[in-house]
Image (cartoon, rainbow, N blue to C red):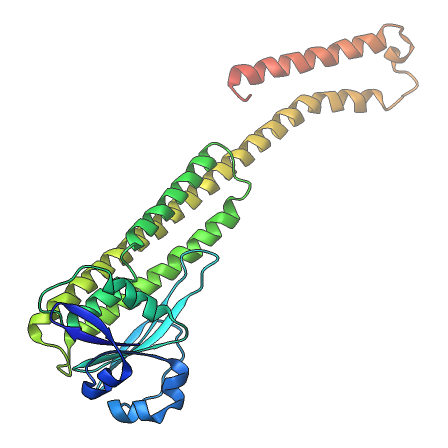
Length: 303
């Protein structure tokens, strides 16, 4: 797809119109860019596209080159990956499927501005990928808060699996926003003077917004760690309760074990062995020991 940058926004054009001026936005597939040398010759860019594994922006003499990898927000979604070349009068987007065309179509349906420019398009395009991310992060925060409440209520069956998933997602987005912040800073520096100085503020706005998102993701990481500490504390309390109960049981049965061992020796001259009241007497003494032990533990608050 091809788009012209007009004073009041962007407009879709055909290939012939775009080639007549070579200004605006050109969206190509990665395969076409790597195989078709005509495009590289027209734009004067003889640069090999890297594998898109993370977000970055590099400044070259004749162009800016960047790769963007947007993490999927839901399990059924896939990561969005594309590369971008930025020159003084044009932007070349290289996509694997049709994600960039769909994203620009959303911009076409959005607000219009006066004195639209390449800088304004880049701002709108880049920030369109993070426009709903604050709501997304708030959803993660609510999920962590729900897990914290479940831990305090004693429901910890799937806590470890759920927290591991959340920690991985929050960490992934924290790195993503940190990388986008670096991209914003590279655009602001404008070392090769691709942008007009009065339009640099748009990139500064983008960089500030991404930085706030990275700080929000950082706070979520800390919140998740606090909830994990609460979980570990609850597990420790439960273990202490179990050990306390085992100690109480062991203490109660210790004198009973002594009596059983004592009268289990079966010496020939033990007078209790020949007494008809010895057996019920030992039972009564054992019951008294248990009752007294329980009363003592109750008074001490052990159970």
